[in-house]
Image 1: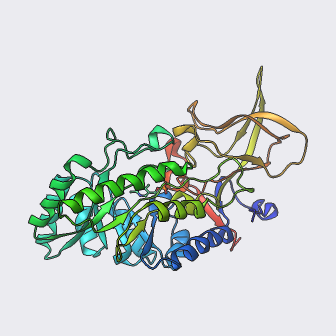
Image 2 (image 1 turned 90 degrees about the vertical axis):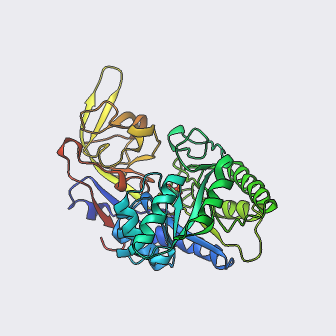
Image 3 (image 1 turned 45 degrees about the vertical axis):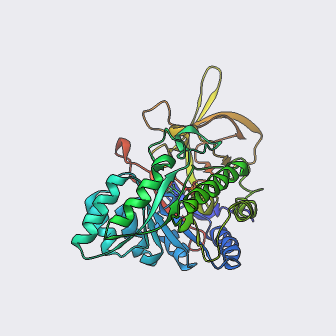
Length: 385
Ligand SMILES: *Cc1c(COP(=O)(O)O)cnc(C)c1O
């Protein structure tokens, strides 16, 4: 399954814009749904922050998945897009009172609580509304992930979660608070993880913790293993699907669960990254002394990942089949980091050629900014164009 670009139709559209391959998204969701259907106690909560485009959210909620939110506004967006409130989980180290109140009023399924301080505030606010909040404790498992340091979250030095050493006390604290109900443990070790041994390490750590807690007579509740499965940014057409089989198989085989214990997942990137491309036009080809630049009309304000963490995206000239030449592909924004790729071989570029920056469906449109007073990007969909 490879994304086909309707170039004739693109010609009437102002660039840059996001183009979503809806058939690819649906196939991806169906793959995941078919695995889940074989496991009645497994639940998927799509991580809204990867892409909160309402059209995509509608499709994902329509598959019966839940949502993983990291802000009150994401909860609003999720509910609006049809996610059932009871299927929404809410994480974040800095939930404001207004966000907590809004989440309580939506009657979301579970708060993934990251500190004792937050737990007390949640208990108070729930009490003031006459509600009882379901709580999973987010544990910092002190498990590394072989990914970029900006997107590891499960090390003791990271701000996320409750330390293993403090977990027992925090679970006990939940029992003393009248307006919260302890319902499980939550983990999330990072993003763009391709090495299954990282997930094995997470499972081993969860098993260890569960055993320790049970020995002390403490319940563990349900387990939420978070998200983080990576995608292939190098070869978007050869590998349009994340390796869901390896991922679910790894977790299924290594995580020890009791009968009746639910297992929650929060995949974001792997569900939406492959279906999105940023489409931009070549404005100018500029000859430097030792190199040439393809200056395009898209920039870091539409897709910040290359500038933010030197992320690689496959760049294609979808208008030209001329011989390859080497370019630095750069945007117009006044930052030297506004570069999509250096020394990229592309069919010879001319003004007006369409350039597709692939695998941009996750952490692309959601991270767009208006720096330089640029407008937020528009989106078009393969099903409607
Ligand atoms: C970002 C995030 C996810 C999703 O991560 P992906 O790498 O996109 O799968 C899941 N859970 C939490 C708590 C997150 O913050």
